[in-house]
Image (cartoon, rainbow, N blue to C red):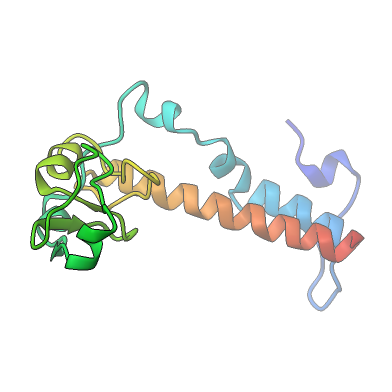
Length: 155
């Protein structure tokens, strides 16, 4: 398979030469690893597996809060079991600020690494999954960069 430059009968930029933005975008796609990252999907890495459980250390360090009288008066409920909290009852708070009964959220986090309400992902102990999350983040950043470049060219 011919390279981009051979296919389009052009040469790479010489030192000090100003880039053509369209050519720059093509180079990012081909040489910058964008295509590989954008093609990476969860199933291609993990098959039909579920995301791994949350890191034991992160779960152990989740803050424990106690329900206030105001929350009790407002009928504050655990989103999992839908039972109203009583004053002074413990809750575990996730980084996304959602709170749950410990008996409700701890078994959930032993099975998966995300908040049951908003799907915010907590760190895991699985190095493969953590690398996948990094690549997914890089792909999102690259998509943003491409859209910004496109907007600067045509916007």
